[in-house]
Image (cartoon, rainbow, N blue to C red; front, side, top):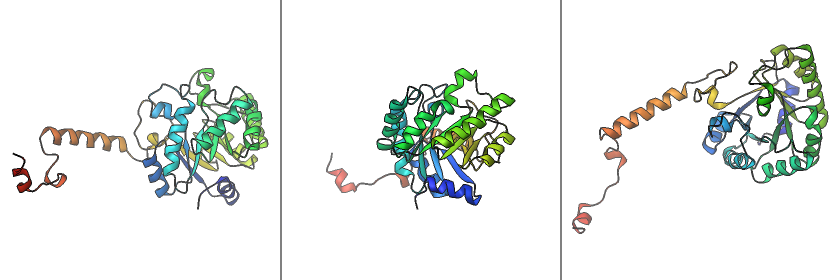
Length: 275
């Protein structure tokens, strides 16, 4: 059965941990679905991992729609959440609603995710009011990396921690079905998780959240430009890929590949008629 916002809520109520990963293409989505992942995020992190940008600020709606639709075609039973990119919702309720609608219709999303707390609650209310599920995102919000002065842990001071708690209550009240907590102290994330009725999804927020998410290239050792502290490498796929590429280069150079088993035949009688 297709996993939905109800799946998230039931998981929280039953104490079952939710599993999420980012993905950006059809074939990877197929593999994740076959493995049993609950939901995937088509994150604007594709700006870093797929497009080679230094941050997520340059990612466009067209980028998100293109990758979202590809993932949706391979998602199977997984729920597909698509990020709203920088300046697709910050400019006001109308833009937020129109762009969320595009991600649903053209990007084939089942839900959208947007960064921010109280300041974006009018947008969350409008989007959810139109029947579009919204996942919120608090703590280190990458679209605000320039305002933060870099990728820094958030919520370490009393004032900052209170602000994140207030924002968490606010996005819940506005209608968000879940909230991502990124790069905040584990005890603060656990406190928020226990206080909220909606599920929390942690990334660099400890294991007290209702679920976890990672960038799949980080957990497979495929992206080395920047590896965050919280990213555990579950497999060294990057090394395996480089080894395979090197083997391919050698076999082609030495004339070993393609061998007879990889080629197609033609009858000699046919060939003789050609010359």
